[in-house]
Length: 373
Image (cartoon, rainbow, N blue to C red; front, side, top):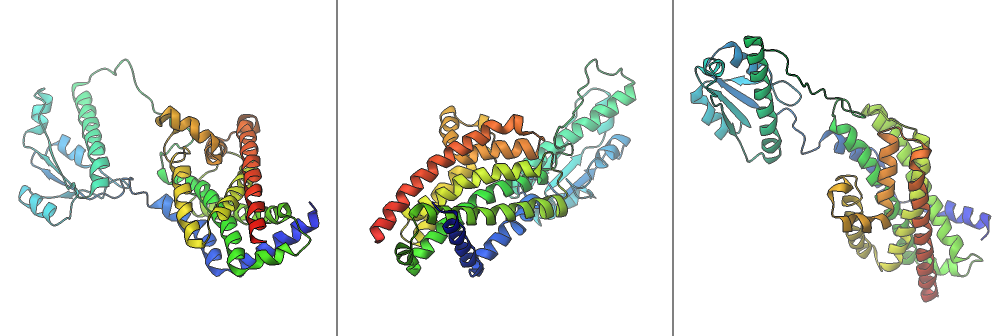
């Protein structure tokens, strides 16, 4: 394999990509708007939920409860009368309506365990499911604090102190932004290399390559380094200007070490893209095949759901996927500030898997070129 041929073939791929506005728009969207949207619009997050309170007690305790609901989880509570509650729920103005009965504080101090009615608009499923638990916890905490203060009780012998490491604010946007970068690195690397190969087949340029003094290894290596470089630069831009700049997400470790791990990962995923490109006979087939491959890679790699929550058979099977090791590596570096001494097993695993995928893709690519010739 001659380095000059590999370099010029890679430059050819970059020029071809530069003339494809759709692919350029996809890359720009995936590492800018898609990152921002996934981090700021998580559907399971309770954000500015509308709540109304019917305060029939009008006591210091009920006032304290009403004052415990504030942004960003809830909008400022609307203080309404009991006659308005059903009408506002029917009109969709409130997701939650809390009804504090008369004599509530008196019954609490007397130890009678009074009940508070919480009406929930269950058609707003994500807010209803998450918000009900939030409201129950808020009311319980406020009542317990009020009773302790009123009765001057001693501090419990055990006090739970919460210290959230790596994400002190428990901000889901921090998680969503980085996970989306990880997912898009995988998706774009497979899409670009597979589409580049299919585009050459559809345009007939594969036949031109066959009469040139280049080998299949040189052709494939040129595609791998060119498309991998594009994705790597886009990921570095996204981490620097979108994640750390626009979204103000703190990065715990070395971005350079993460990009080094991404480089090894791209070696594996670009090889996978070429393999899929040799299997698919057209761009629509490649798109359908991509769906079948990308969904398991992203859902079962541990990025969205911890691997420990999955069946052991799935955990073992996914060790053969490069995304599993890349997610472990990326989260350890970007979230927890891990160094090379911690993530070197993932580097080794990615290198081994990448070499295997590259060998399989090269064999398939040679077979496809032989059939074309």
